[in-house]
Length: 202
Image (cartoon, rainbow, N blue to C red):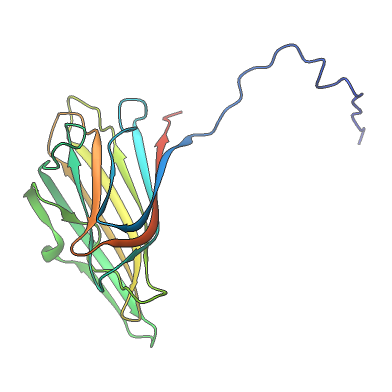
């Protein structure tokens, strides 16, 4: 196989270069909790991207066994009161090898709820090594035609078990969603990071 040899002027002699792809997922912003009552993203969610992804890394609560919740806004975060309909499934596995597939549980559903709704179906433990990590996708939030779908998958540790949950639903509005707020059902978010990405369609 022939080797390609470049002289010392190979790069410096380049006079133009086509634009390089930055990848399909672009980090917009990130926030780190520190005994925070809530974390809100009030900018960066607009018509720039058709899909937005949130990454939740080691969310740790001050209180024990509390659920992460969220709500949506159409006015930049002045009000979080979009009607949401959701459905959820889940499973768990204890450290002592007891396991269960819970499947669908109507108790985790929301039906046209304008309040904060649960992220996944169980709480997060507040022992030193317990936390939640998850992803959330929000689709086409700036559409003036369609409702706003979201998909959530998260894994949490609480009371010596690994709990995995899927939640999906939609914000029932044709107004643009431009802000989102995350909080716990009670108490502060002791620590953890939430990252917001925009995903290109090509």
